[in-house]
Length: 141
Image 1 (tube, rainbow, N blue to C red):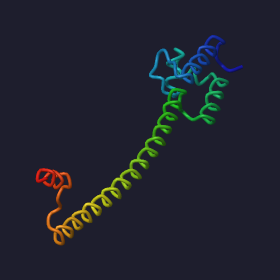
Image 2: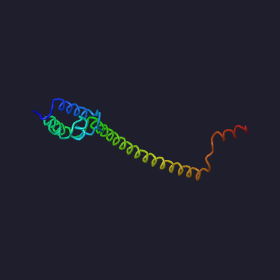
Image 3: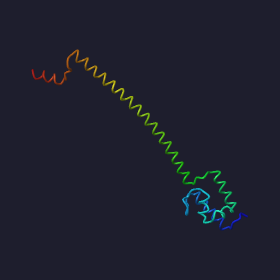
Image 4: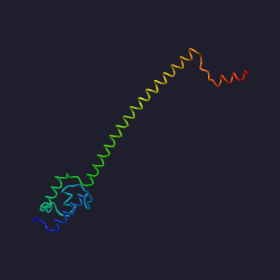
């Protein structure tokens, strides 16, 4: 015999089930013994006399910890989001490196282009647009 009435034991088991499921009616839902007896509507002393229920409580805590289903889901979601954030941060780092490399190449190409223009100008004078030159020749003819 567990030391409490069947109604009290049933109330404690139902309260424990609600706390485990994350659907409390009378408490904040934290998986604590205080919430268990308050959720069941019994005193702490009465709860402590329900040895069978307390053994189930202790077994559940030993196996799953003090997290409710909602807390476990939340923690799982947070772990998943942290993993995604880590992936995205790594991708941003890789893209930043590619962007910096592209900017370096563009700057080098710009420098080379400027140097080539200066070389052409020094050997042949200013570069003349072919369309302008043809238009001038056609006008003279």
